[in-house]
Image 1 (cartoon, protein in one colour):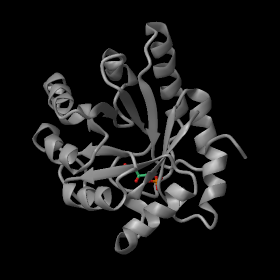
Image 2: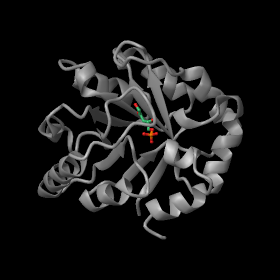
Image 3: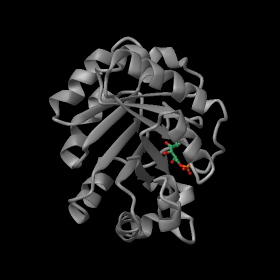
Image 4: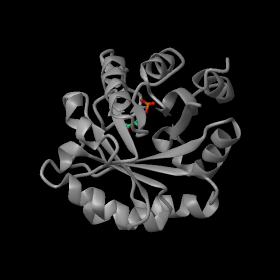
Length: 218
Ligand SMILES: O=C(CO)[C@@H](O)[C@H](O)COP(=O)(O)O
């Protein structure tokens, strides 16, 4: 079944535990932790101490960490210690050393993901099918929540899904950016397994209804 990852970037940080507890109670499957360094992307979010506090408050949640940072190998262990279940980094950040970063994350005991920006040819991720646990396709330019879904995304997911089937591997396909009741189902139809949703969940009057819809249960 499709999993819904709630992106905490859209939470009220003064009430982070409350907002996350609510979303998990409303049916979200996991928490998506967007880490931005103001260098790889033009925004700064938060670091491992925030995850550590959240993990302490909500130890049973699964933490899907998305590193939008220039030096993922340097910080992977910090996020693993803080409670990450899966750590995703961007191929564009480390074009020549992706294998080393994968090994560094694996050494922490976490699952490993790679991500690609909207402008990166989807074929760049093909060699990692069956190598990493998850491939995250960005459906907006990374850096900010609340952006509009890029319409070419389902086609990119479908290409990855077809290649995944051709290779017979089980790598999870995740999509992130502008996911809502309209765009989520298009991504699922194209092959996405995990949907990251921020503003459409945290700002919804009835988040449970959005989760049900994204789960395909509405
Ligand atoms: O990584 C990012 C943005 O860089 C995303 O996780 C967004 O935070 C998703 O937010 P919405 O587009 O769903 O509001």
